[in-house]
Length: 581
Image 1 (cartoon, one colour):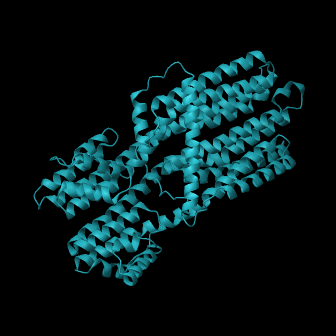
Image 2: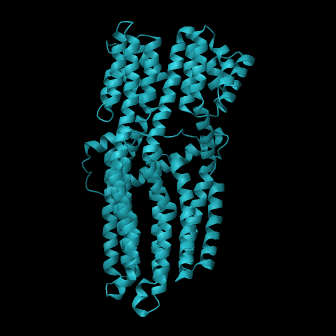
Image 3: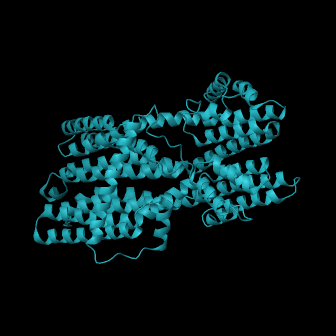
């Protein structure tokens, strides 16, 4: 395993070095570097990119300028529909590289920031627990920074280190750095800091206010976002799906009326312009999400996840060949590329990300039982039992598969005499193959409670209540967004391909005369088929990102399923409509 990891690191180093040399060469070809905006620099720092921002931005602009000039040169020097189509495609690709270099970095930083803020409720609750166990802002900050591995926890640790040796704890500067994006976080952290200086009788009330403040703030942010999303999502649905497909159905009539409908126009419109506009709209909508609760990241080193992508790639190639032949035999010759692309890419994505989805399903089931487990352990701690004894008795009150994890940890501790944290998180521990931040945080809390004893019972119970409240907020958020996200998903996988396939079949039935030769199904089919696949990818990514937050594995798995469904539905609609008309 370590050898494979070393090989991957070496391969990444080679790729990074090659990319750096290419970028340096492009920058050297330019007379000077461009001025980098402040928001771009902030995004660069958040992403922790090693190369200077001037380098990437200048290189992307250089590619855009050089590629555009080359595309224009080809268009002027070579005539014909094919040359025009190629030059337009190359021009769009060049401009796309420039736009990606300028706006891709801020968008990636925004996506990371949104995912980061999803950990705010857990971080504040950990601060509350730390302040409950030790009425010290410094110790509470150290406890939260130690038990968390999110970007927020690392930033808190950074601010605490900067404040070392001063009267400050670092909590104030940490909260202020996120105040513009999530005001509830600043208020909650401020309440925690105030609680550590409050009298002992008032401290529990102030800490509870801090915990409720971050939960209510998260709920309010997501409710406002869900309410504001309906209008833009409706516009995206109308102008990205309904209108383009309705325009395609009118192309035969437009050709009959003398409107020039040529291959470059169709390819440029449905192959470049509309997908680019749809991509920009999707990115804008995703960028409006205030916080996200993404699922746990599953490393490729997990024992239940294949380490190599080669089997998935091979399966995708086989599926692509099968899609090519079946589409050509059952639909038409023009359908073969669409069948190969949809079946091949969809199968590869599903095969590659299915193991991750299965591991995540198990993690979700384990996390669902954590509130019950903490409540059971907390009650027994209040009665004077030890954490070790409480864990053994809590097995019967905890649903599966969480109970199996607790039982394995208790057995490991009894046989090996290890600590509570070691029984869960140590080598071969009960959570060794469960990469869940929440479960790991619970294990760390239980280990701390074992050292403190019965006084930590209330804190353990509070942590269970917090996890239950957080799950409630996540369910409410997804319920508020479900109507929009389900419409987008169904459009991507079923409705869009159905309308697109019917449009192509109708155009073919009307294209028997010479006046419709420019919009025959042989021309319209691949163009609309491509746009249907674009809709499947973009709308599925948008729906998943709005529902769960942008996550590569989740988006990849659902996109693969959508591609398979869209490809099959599109061809069924073409054949069925052709039989009816």
